[in-house]
Length: 348
Image (cartoon, rainbow, N blue to C red):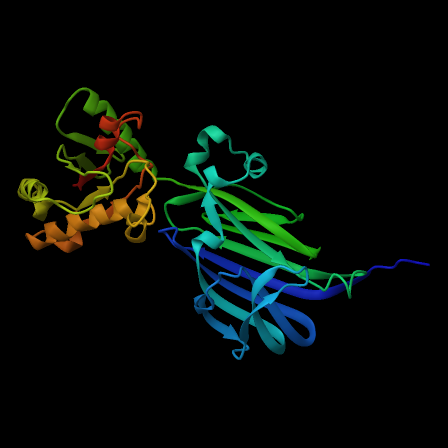
């Protein structure tokens, strides 16, 4: 008896993933098309919040708890018969990405990341899969005619490496990465990315370190021979662990900073927040899910007070670096205390 396998083509899928700069959420726009009119079931993890779905077409879908064809508990979003299905959803980033330190070793190896520098990266995973009933259709394989998955990362991040479990073509343009494949039943995509900073800021930080070692009070760096002059002020706001609020001593220092700046004759002041690498735990994580948020709030609180005492808002820029630009090596309590700070860059 011949054991024939039937391959069904005609399905297509196009996804676009927009990563929020805070790394707290991902906006996903998905369009799926099928060769004949019929229903569609999307299977989610049981804890998935259906309120994440912002828009869907057809719009009269049904949400229920169910099991997928393999017997796994799922939350099902079932759509009525159609040729085309469109979904826009804003999901928690936890559904798609993890710090590379929490990723399996075999994945890190494929992404060319060593354990020693894994703390510099995040890994994003996306899956495209067509599921058929394994009992009723065990000799039937449903294939995507084509799959196109695009990933848009925010300014300040760069794609480091990527791979897929199904062969396909890749194209990277700036911070946007596209994967395209044909005639596949499914694929898993893994993308390693990390925060980066523009060359000007890198050179500024390098010069600032050199000047600090010589104990000079102010550092000036030129972007180009004819470019702007950037001055790193000696004043810094320092913080206890997990704190972003200002003390009265901080406000006193900020008044000094405000009075030292010739606001009429500068282009802008960059207020940049920093954190040490301690993970944020417990109740504090509800307010600051990561060191990105903590460092951003440190900058924001400083900026709000500067504006309150008279600084022109149009000449202030908020910046944050999380734990990724330490001033000192994070190898002691005193060094980490020095890394919990806000710096001021004056652009002339």
